[in-house]
Length: 215
Ligand code: 1PW
Image 1 (cartoon, rainbow, N blue to C red):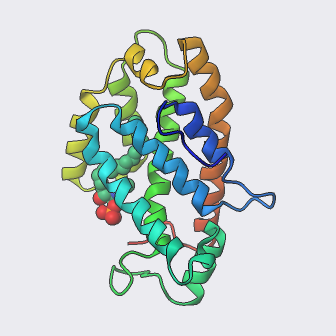
Image 2 (image 1 turned 90 degrees about the vertical axis):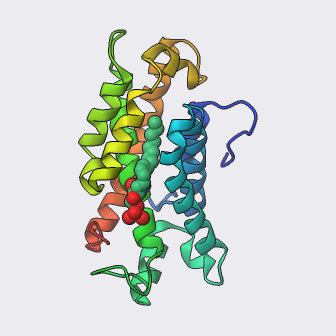
């Protein structure tokens, strides 16, 4: 199912949404991708108010994608592949600097795509962590290996400060609402391949069209 239940939050439901992103011919369904991100935002918000500054930008980006999808040419945004083709064919992407199309689907999605890599690295660290591992350290390492290189100094500073107050590993696993530590680790083992697959296909799509550095 595409929907994320409102009442009982479970990270498993969120990760499964990313599974439903993929069509039979390996295209990524925009609505499912956006729904996956809605779930991630709810997860971030459940980590405490300090994370709301981080989720705020994701919420903005989600809204931009929804606006494209609900617009006159919404059908062109059905998959990420059709979006890229439509926007490039019609010169709707700022390639050098942000100008006429500061909120293109392509540049907006790229920001979510980069953040998904962070999430992937972080969850993988959590999955293979031990009892004495620190969530703040795992989260910071994942960030420095991915998203940080695309962020200005001030954002990096603020993000790194937010990570410091992440709940410890045990509390963090409880926030996921999946069950025991063993169940969390098993769930992550099942769900991570879907996130990785979605990430890889998007990365390949952007690479093919030379869009990985969009301003
Ligand atoms: C614990 C769960 C972690 C899930 C990953 C969440 C990623 C959230 C994105 C971090 C945003 C930090 C503040 C915003 C920075 C923006 O400048 C930046 N946006 C992103 C998503 O990286 C770049 O967007 P911009 O300024 O080029 O429009």
